[in-house]
Length: 210
Ligand code: SF4
Image (cartoon, rainbow, N blue to C red; front, side):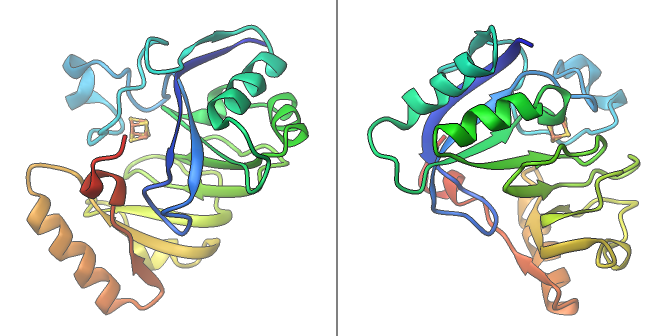
């Protein structure tokens, strides 16, 4: 199987429980909830995306012929050293492309494999850290994992319902939008009202990392 990758680069994880960790970001092209074209945004299932996942023209992006080539690119992005190798696989929606062969190839190169998904497709086995970020109005089939990241506010999402899903960590993250101040206030309010939720900030944007 071949893989279409928007970008692949070394950075620090900016969000969630593993924020601050050195990681290779592997961003697959394509999403099942939005085409990525601005003219389609209003009618998309997910309307608040802050990510360019279209095409393969980003830093380290391209078409990779097989899992070995993909894993070699991730290892090259990490560079020297085998200690605490971490790859964060995101998108777009990574479960459109990620398969067990790719996960195995990354494991053989010493990587822990973290995945960030919208949860509308079932996650494959073998993932070491699974983060699900549900979107209002979509059918989330993947209701277990390590980290549930709720971008907030989202009309039509009930935090009490999400608390019943099987995740070790529940994080609420202010939506990156024009009404950012209100979103921060709403996220703080949720974490204050419902102690299961912890506030997560996008540290990479604060400090200017990709
Ligand atoms: S599901 Fe994620 S990648 Fe897809 S459009 Fe929404 S925010 Fe963007």
